[in-house]
Image 1: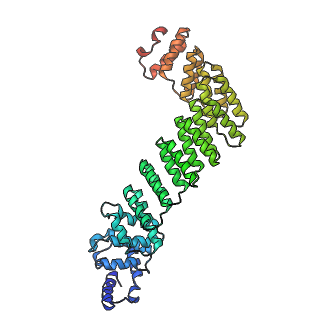
Image 2: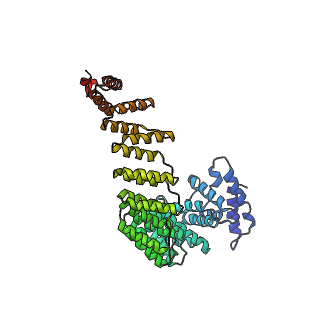
Image 3: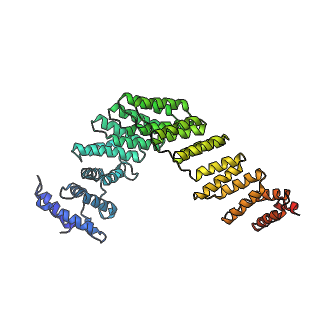
Length: 467
């Protein structure tokens, strides 16, 4: 029996059984739908031309047909609108959505609901959908899933006003609101930079009696901190603590990081005080945020104390944290403290990396200690780290600044041997200095290199000195 013949039979059966339908005429339906779905041939008018809204609704509600097949058949009809005399209406969409939710086919249910709630081509107002779903679903668990899915669909598609309508409807009609769905909505509001709406929605959650999770709290605090309002975030954490909702270390780290980056140490002390009161211990990330903030501001002693505390607690101290302190000491010109810190770092088993050596070489050469700088260059190379072009250019420049043009010239030869081309400005600078100490042969070599690289001899400042 084809689907067309089945539909004709169904019409006859309905006329013969006015008060109810025998189960026998329905038996072939699952097999017929399966046959249509598995055929490789394109549909033609004879296949589904007799399909009408009533029989279509029957197919969607037939208990012998799996929800997944209903979904596939539904999409088949949608894609072949020219072959049928009607368009699936709101009731058909909602019936299918509820069946899919009951079968736990959530992504298919979301796609179906989205087409009538947010898509421009076929969109119904929330209250129309809410009124219609009452005629499609009678199981409270499925109704709860349906409205939570609606909230998610509206949120994912930026329909924040509709989210509030859905939320209020659920609250007023005693439909359980899933806190996780609310968390996802808070994150969506934060991503859309709708901080005011996020705060409003969060307090609505609190007032409704929803059991607030640390994830919802953290989402709101993160949004506030990103917006620079750490104080408000701290106040909400304190307020929620009074309600028995404890913030996590992640929540506190967000506030600590925001304070440290803004050098707002007054607010930072208040956050740390709140954290101590709550009995939340520092983790490695907490120490990193604090050390980064203290070193960038110049509170080097506080940073050093925290590194010591990390070692005492057996926490892993990354090379990066020592590099932060070394960098700060170098900026202050405190080379003695740089060396002391480097020794302490080695004694504690923290291995220097390429960035560590860059800081040491740059710091020593900056204050004219070229011998120590080259000592660290050699140590660096023995450990498998190589100089890059930036480091070569920097060292050549520093040698020239300190009147050590011979060393600069030799370093340039090493640099070229490793495939790097020295900066033309530095070549010009070396050439002038070589001429000043009558090393014209080396100056001529530099001039030839510059000319080969396309520099006009007239642009070279030491050409006349060579002559």
